[in-house]
Each structure stands twice: as C-alpha cells, then as structure tokens.
Image 1: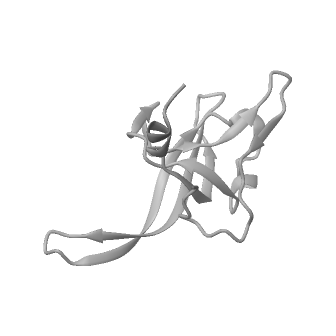
Image 2: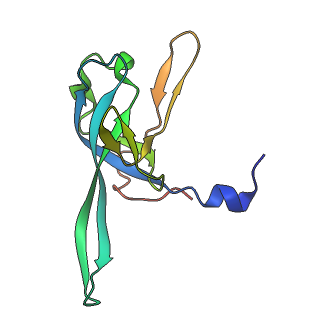
Length: 122
C-alpha cells in the first residue's frame, strides 16, 4: 500500500501520438513521439514562453500493433513525471498506460477524444 500523498506525486496526462515506429532488432519495443500540449517555460531573463511539449517514449507494445501506424493520432494516458530512462540506447521520457491479460487481451487507456493533450488526470 502507498499513501495518498505518494500517489498524488504521479503526474498522469493525455498525450496524442504523433508517430510510432518499431525499434529494429527488438520484438516488443516501439518508439513513440507524443504531444502533451503547450507548456509555459520561464527562461533565465525571467521571461515566460510557451512551447510544445513533444516527448519520445519507448513502449513495449509492439506485439499488439504489427502496423504501428495505427497508433498515430490516438490519444492515450501517460505518466509524465518519471525520470528519463535509456532503453536500447534511446531515451524514454514517460510511460504509456495499457492493460494486458495472460490470455493475450490488450487495451490502451484512452480518454474521451475531445479531451485536449496535456490535460492532467485528477
């Protein structure tokens, strides 16, 4: 068991998959480019700028998507505040939420399509 305070530290956001490609010489891995909407950034001159938050995420879901292009344009839920992790030499900056069963059933966790990218789960 974890406390509510520990759980509250997890940042879960809607991301829109911009591209998806199989990682060569792997059975399970896909490289996703995911848009998490616009973010505000304060620079060293204390000026606020907005930029698109697009991240690379490596996910072990290739077995469920023989044609990864079917993922392009889909909105899914992601954990966005994990420390970056290097997988097969590629940096991953988040984690896709998905479910699978022992008998091979699989589902992405997808929000209602009209929920904008970057929306945080509460």
